[in-house]
Image (cartoon, rainbow, N blue to C red; front, side):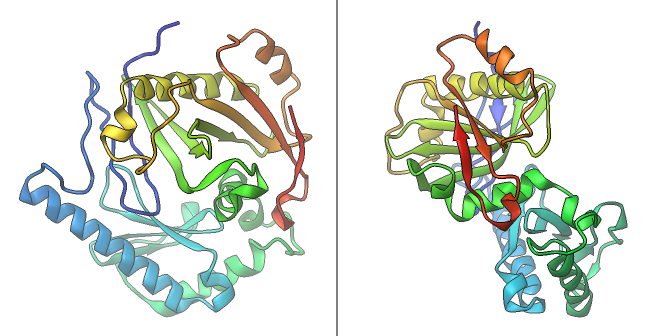
Length: 289
């Protein structure tokens, strides 16, 4: 099977390059290198917005809540998403902040510390590992993103061989008109790329979804695209195809997953990593197959 020509956009905590979703495959950097004054200005504005939104939210939060807030630039947009333990609770753009979770998000308005504080207090109460009301929407929403934040905070909880310096989360991946999002893209201490797909509940499509992303990442690896455009700086990536890790609570893998894996090419090295059911209270690997 030959991989399709694809593009990937990557968002990380530090200002990353972005691989454009063009066909044929083409790249552009998100740091202004080789681009016009308008593009550089746009990048500076977006980076400034990220700092402003992150600072405003953390000033409004108490110390415990602040350490669980992360800001990320939304791919292909000037908006900044603010997340609490992986759950988006606000969007910031052009000095305006739209606060709220999901359908409850309000119209954009000026930064208002009291409103942010009120929402963060509720998030800290209900999106909490020790929350009593486990059926609350804040507790149950976006569980994969919550797992993602736990892995990013301490990758060694998942696998000691992961290099904690390089983690790209929520990686938009494009192929023609298709769009997907890789949960995590990382690299081992032995310089081997790793595609990490997360699930908190049974999903029969998980293996084939991961294979699709494996094809896309392998395509760019073979072309040296990652290092050419600034990903994984300072290391020479292993030329072998990427590893694939399917991560989910141990009892939440679909029964068909193991059957599907038997029919995949041996070239695709897939590992299932089962987590403890109470992962919110602390991530622990139960099995690795």
